Image (cartoon, rainbow, N blue to C red; front, top):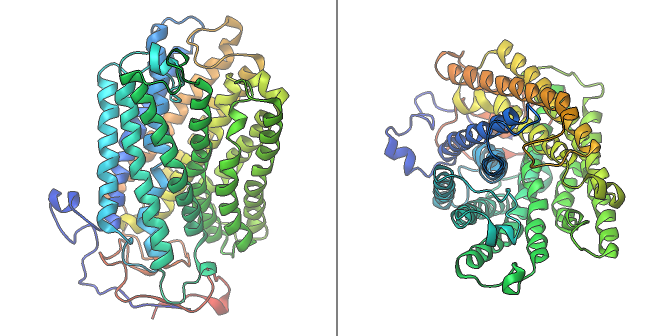
Length: 541
């Protein structure tokens, strides 16, 4: 049983506890900081989406007739930089994790509220550098900044772009540190490790990657900036450096970074499926430890990005085997989710539609990753559109579907308003359809040999590219519809009850939206998490 008190009617919620812009910019409330992040990542998502639209518009015809090749290089570089570093990595941890992790463990805030606010400011400073690069004409290296191209041959804004990502990395480090300390030190009485929601486990594992991996990419990009600006030889052979060393350092972080993007989504999907099946998750312990296993094994597989980069064939064999092994914890999660739904009382509300979509798209992304982990297939598929499709099935189909599912799941709690059930389901179906139409043809294009990062291609590939561009238009429409009805709901949506979905985790035991202190008194946990049977129903007394 979880005991708490009803929020006092006169108690102000976190949205109106203090008024004025200054109170928001100087807040230490984790919920307000989460809203600041939500506004920021939505802006960068729209910006990155604009570049995606330009890319697909160019590729609708075989000839490079919209822009020159150097401008196209800037399009896909800025799309990648913005989406990866300023949306996909921070979106769920900084927004949903920030808002709900303390509430789920019965805490009144994160362990370091001021550091939490500092992390948002650092994120914004990094974003300003990126906007400066954008307004100055962009950068043309690709989002990986491979050397020696980035250190010697590309345009002059590599330094500013590298510094922006370097600065932004500290935001992720501070957020991960805050989450780890909060989970260790601020759990409510009775909240043991195996009574924590699986959303918390997923963010704990993600925080481990942020703490251990982000310093590597930060130092790597800082060395790149030094080489570019001061001609100190780290990676450029002209200065005595090794370009493959850059690839090792970059992917040592960037493959685990995939799990920074996807692990929080997995936590979201677990919460959604459990709630809308009114059933305990099948294999709680396996799901919890699989999150930790993904975080650990994620650091051991970076070499599969270097199968064609002068890496030893023996090292390639080791990384290939490890890449197959890392798929096992993800497969455990997919099996447990489907087992949870089996004979469950499944309600197809909007968050559940996104969760089911996530399972399908992530499964396709994961299985196609096994093709890339095979040395022979990898040689054929490297730097083709097969890689683009695989990456987007994991990142867009996984991370963004999870983000959208989480936003729809917790929106009534965050803002105290319900959104349109009809339009939200329409948007979810449109997004799922548009996504598959956009990226599935790219698997075929990649297998046929279409290289990535080219703005012109043979005419026989146009039909598949037109399908992909049409799908991108449908996908964009789905996102636009979602933004419109969510914003509309802020003023005109029906008042949300404290627990509209019948969930059992602690954040639903408060008013919607929550009071500034989250709980009137510290909750005391006396039973297991996810208790849905009639005799184990949660009570708030």
